[in-house]
Image (cartoon, rainbow, N blue to C red; front, side, top):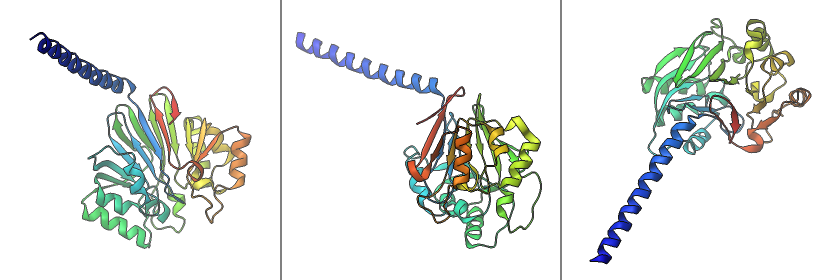
Length: 285
């Protein structure tokens, strides 16, 4: 009988220890309240996955092909099959080619775009996927905010006007600033030097951010000295394919960032790059 009582006490203590473990884990998770910003390794292209502390998610661009699904699979929790919003910065294939697969695989609430059409198979496939899945389309314009909750806000800085049809789709690229508490990310798509100059004239010091996603995969057509100086990031991220045929990132951009003493991390070297913010500081995971 005494042995039965002793075993029962051990069993109760084990249950109590397990319960305390789960309570502690929940309290720790609640105290962290982290924003996650992942620059996905999609080869020569862009894809950025954002998850607010409350679990709301935003995907910006999707690379050229299906590799975005592989990268998202490594970030999503089991059974998660929804993304609150998908944003296409502009209709170039290396930014939207993978989005039709995303829209068909995941339940998506909103599709955000600059409203610039393209006569390409990639853009037509994207619009078909948006229509088939009855996703609400939203036109991005300066001043618009995407509120992900818990204080995480994506503010659209550009475009600030309608473009209609244009051969230079990069000039219509969405530029946006992601803010969580005192931390900020500048996300530039493929915006060229002229757009950067306009933003410097409009926003000046308001462009400051902890992390800069260098425009156009580190091409010399973006990342002007005035713009990079205004942003003044602690780190610059370059999303590009390893040994790509465009020579991205260009030496001019790397030299500028070096002169300004801004460290550079690239998907072409490190693969997917993940940052976390607690609202006070940003760290690379």
